Image (tube, rainbow, N blue to C red; front, side, top):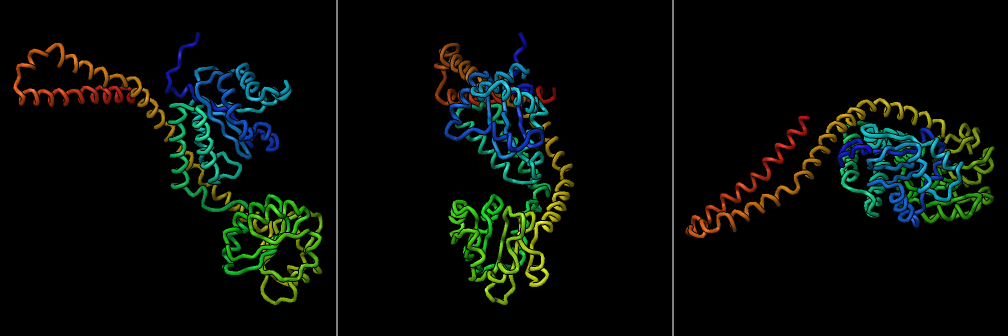
Length: 416
């Protein structure tokens, strides 16, 4: 029988991770849980795997199970764990999970979680969204009654570490996604006020772009897309007029900004289409082409000389910015290492607090016994003033008898 691990030992801390580093992004979807079944699935998993605490994180590029448990995480444990997580999985699917997970334990598990929340381990280093996702995952797991003291303490420290990383380094300073860079370029051009924006395409890139564009309340949007259904969904976010892509060549209402991103193999903004879109206007035009291959015919850029923002240009900037972020990693890792050390102390302090939590009640009981039984007759013979002084002295000593031993115990454990 293995010895019981103290409740606040790092040895109890484990992480079972599936991330973009080891698993194809399309396969991570196998581990997502619909919100409607989250409570049932996770409570069943906690009960059947017999772990004391459980937290579940699910994003587009990772799924992680954070665990506090005395159990040894062996292959047989993992097999039971994945079978409990997905009872309908076949043997082959369980085998896939056994092969593709990465297990972190103790201090390495803590370091991994600090890296995750600080975006050091992210697909795009420095993206702040992960700290929000981490906090929301914790709050949901706590709401479902899956977490306890250990994961609660770990989460508070993890969020503190992430904030320190973002505040004290420049890991998140320069944008590295082509969409955010494209929008930054548009902002740098000073484009404001009433602008007519023609959008061609309604895929995920345009959905991401719409989150930025929606900030400009004076922009007037027109969307063209092969799928009217997708165009209408995007149109709701931007309050836009929506048309089929086949109507693009007939559109002659002019534009100020053209943003395009389709999956076409040949340019769809040809010379003829461009002339129709311009509608004879002589004002300077802005074109943002996020497609690969390009949606805009090269001759248009050379002949009409619009302000042009192209994918290759954006990718080059993104690479430079990412290199700048990489330079900050040593600073980030130093913050993480310092907090692993200090978190060990925080765990030991919590251990002392729990071990000493009965001391106040015990001291109070001793005091009451002394006043009402042992020295009852002697106290009864005192005058009111003497009795008042005695109560103040005993009250003072009671507080000291509680605080002094706790401070001494903490100091002893921290020195250890």
